[in-house]
Image (cartoon, rainbow, N blue to C red):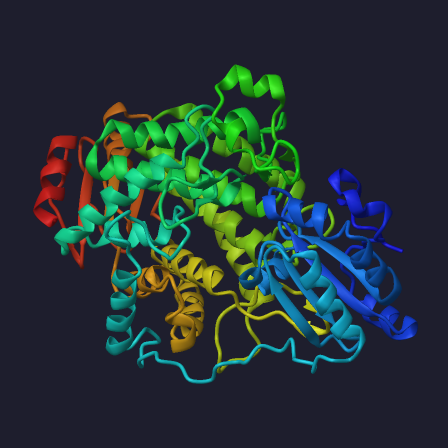
Length: 579
């Protein structure tokens, strides 16, 4: 029997329920033993997962039903992105009951009281639930135009939904939960010059976000409940940390307000203090609870010394390629906003380390040491991080690595249903069914592949972005909240990025100054390059820059380029004219 590797870490029910790790073989075992399968998808950092362990899975009647009639399976959603993507709408925790054929009988969202769990377990055993199907309803009608992009009507509908989801009173997008959403803020930043209301939405949202940044240790909490920013849940997961660094750094670039840079650095320092390993790579998350299952409001009200006297909430020390890719890209962006070389050095160190431990042949990445490049998210995050490192270092080796990783994505994750389009989230099967595309991953992929196209000129990468866009243009997919990511992908694929090229030797201090300034510019969608004559033509050599006696920058938009700009003041004036 394969035992889940996380069972012994903190679970009270381990000696009562024989939890196993996920395996497709369990369905054959269920048939031979005449049992059902109970799947518990949890998160290491999740308060309500701890509560469910303490109250529900320790209940004697629940334990007895599971022991007698079920194969109990527990999955850490951070460790298995395929299962996480499949059931993310139901948790965490998420509870699924399968029959022996892999049909899902029950899917339950969040904490389940013991009495409710008993009722569902009993119904399943009694045959009182009609089998559903794990097969997703595949939409067949795309709303793309002949170019592969969104139709005008769908674009207007998505814009309306984006505005309707905004909370005018508190800032932020969504219902009862408030959290950092990079796509919503990126889209708002991209529309500031056309929409006076965008600046106000951004500022109010950022004010709210500062409330869920830990004032003592730094780092941003996962979210706040009650529809405001005053009721945080205290887990700190890597996805939220990296989004916070990005949006606060971008806000500093747009508005030059020191409080935004302070918040970005506060999250960055948290990563250094709590989630940075001795090897220079990043851990995954920090628990919401000091004592599993007990609310931690009182603990997080304490100062540093008082907290440490009581202890430190558990750190998940797994090292995943996906989470490190997110961190590397966020640190590269923070370096661009600040010019602080130590931040870039950390990003480079993590990238080199993950290459050594997680890269596989043909350019892909494994999630950890237990898989073989099975998940799109790892290669997607690392490929995008490599492109970011090329942008911020102008070192062409990173661009080559990014291209190799994109080739791996194309060759392994292309969705077999051509009428659907998109790229599937994994190479694994769940209950015998193949994985489907994930909306957010395809947004990320569409934007990343499009940027890679502009930096390389390779049309194959543009085709990849359009393939992802084909899936995103399906109305049922595009209209899911939040719509900002789909809008960003559409608008970026519909236009050329702001293109700034520094021409001059990389050893020249003036060229270095021009390049550093270009990286600090307030741009959401850009192509920033450095052409050193000794390195030969740029990878996408689509502009014939003149040979000059001293370094200069060229500012290009919509097929037109500026005269040579020799100082940062000239770049600044040229930027102001383009707004």
